[in-house]
Image 1 (cartoon, one colour):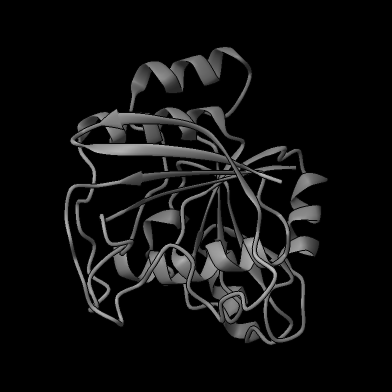
Image 2 (cartoon, one colour):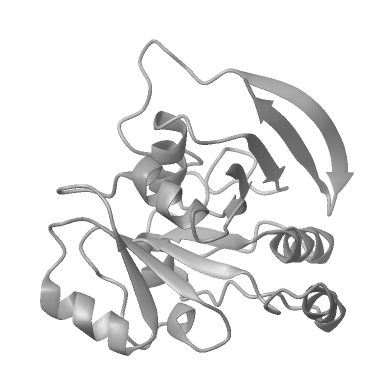
Length: 220
């Protein structure tokens, strides 16, 4: 599976405010770029924190892109994946609507009554790991279901976990023209953090967009 991490952050590296409120860091050109990335992917992935904070749909906005997917024999929207170890995704979340297949990655610690509720709401549960989702094992299961190109959109905890597991192939970051600040505001890669062995990145290109810059790396 090829995993692309895509994120937008402020000039000081923050994904949102210390209150975890969504901030429009990028503009229309970058939104369109992200929509194109979704359309090119087999699945789009977020952590449950992003679902709780933003209630995203994770679908393709542009009708022409959805039509091209249909013409290619694909669903008009990529599958949606939520990393949710203990099933905190609300049953009325937009990621559980009928616009695309949704997989919830859970652990063995997920309460079975919650598993049943999200299944009834339209989600497909993929269990891997004891207390936390084993991302490598879960993505292996998804690969066997035909997901070859995965776009991960955050948040910071999920992005760190993907890097920690050695699963990331590309990193694309839009750096916007704003400063958010706050020592407790989420960053691109939260979690425990690396101490001595850091992921090695090779710069691929840098482009100006929406008064900010888009920086793309490949992961060695």
